[in-house]
Every structure is written in structure tokens, then in C-alpha cells.
Length: 231
Image (cartoon, rainbow, N blue to C red; front, side, top):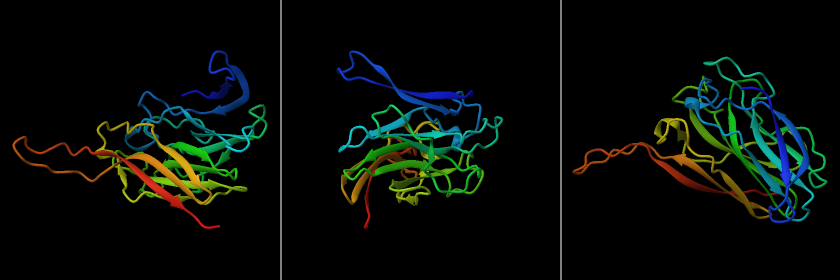
């Protein structure tokens, strides 16, 4: 992969015309040709981003994305260090902060964080979820690597405390496609102290029976997790 740039556009007339925002953020995208082992089982990581606007002040915007930590991609067959970053604008997208690392594991340890989602509550705090391999023994790019779902509330300055919020480990070997579980993660805030995360995961293998014989043990499921906190 070669370095790219995140560029933002917006429309004020229901999509008839678009104009460029001030967003121009360098990014090192994950290769999409399957030749590099950067995430579990060559997990397909879309070169996409999550976007959220403050519901009280629409001039405040957040963009969250995964990036190879600003490093050159490692050679095929070697782990990279994929992290989740956030950038913020407080002037309607004209200017943006530098990227802020969200995951709080050690840097350059070949643990992967990817496919984030972000929402903003009524107090201006961003809530971010993402897939994470930090709890799996190395190598994290192995076909058998398991994935967890992590959460952080962006309130104040980094580092931000990370929490694992899933209770069902995502096993890449139980996915219908060994490289793709979907890019459908979503998070919303429902009150000042509650957020809800919705994400794709896997159940344990199922062994069926009956006249048709064993059923396929690939079992992807939609999960929802309620997140509560106290001040």
C-alpha cells in the first residue's frame, strides 16, 4: 500500500452540490489485495472512516479511522501495528486537530485495532468502539487469532481508558468468510450515562444433526452491548 489522504466533503443542499472541508489527513491504508498479514486471518479492513457531529454544536465534528500508525507497511507475512485514531474540528470542518491515538495498549507491539465507530453525546463527549486483538497471544495476524470489542469515552486529554465490552470472543475461524465479518459496527448514546454498541460477532461452533447431517459451524451474529458509567 502507498500513503493516502483522508479528504472530507459536505453538502448544504441535500446533495445537489458538494464543497471540500478543510480535512486533509495523511493515512497509510491497509493493503486490500490480501498479500499482507496485518490483522487476524488476513481480516479485510475497509479503508473507511467513522464520522459524527455534536448534536448541540454542529460545528464540532469527529472523524475516527484505523491507520498503520504512520509507519511503512511491513513486508507480506509480517505483522503491522494497526491503531485507531480520532481527529476533531470545532469550526465546522475548516480546520482539524492532529490525529489522537485512542487505543491505550503499548505502541509498536503488533496488536491491531480496527473498524471503529463513533458517536457524540449531548455533553460533547465522543464514544468510540472498535475491534481489538490485544488479548490474543502473538502473532496477532495468525489465522486463529481472536478479536474483542473495545470502547473508550473521549472526554479530556489522552490517554483514554479502554474497556473491553464484549462477553463473546470473536473467533475468525467461525466466520462465513475467513476474511470478512462486515463493516457494520455502530454506537449511539442514549443518555448522559448510557451508550449502546451494536456489532458483528461469532458464536461458538454448532454441531447439528437430523436428516441433513451436521450444519455449518460458521455462525455470525449481531450483538448489542449496553455501556453505563458513573461520573
